[in-house]
Image (spheres, rainbow, N blue to C red):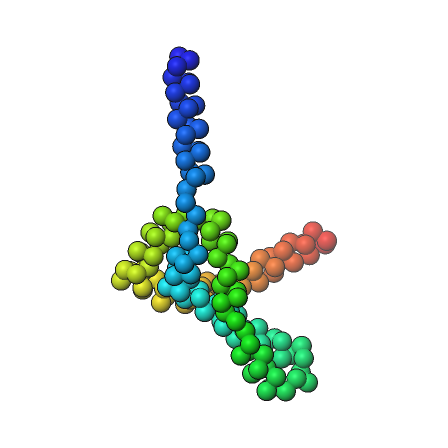
Length: 145
């Protein structure tokens, strides 16, 4: 019985150590993944969403300021900041497989519809959150009566 346990334990340790030796993806392959998915445009998208809020916080700033500010946003800077996150959580094989999928017809469709899915999901999530809050308020009110 002991040889079986030893063999099992040795095999398990080999598998665990082999996964920790998995090759981290190259910066170039992660950058390609970000470009293929459209995440490479993340900085531009974020700025488009943030500037209206920033304008409300600084209403005296002229429009020319905001145009200049937006033109100074460097998407590569943000991209370079997120690449290590991908490298921390994915292997080169993971990135290669994702690239292969995303470059297929089905993958391209997923890239196109994913923003719509996320947008609609966020709306549903907000509605759900409102209902939860109403339910919590009703429950609290009932307990106070």
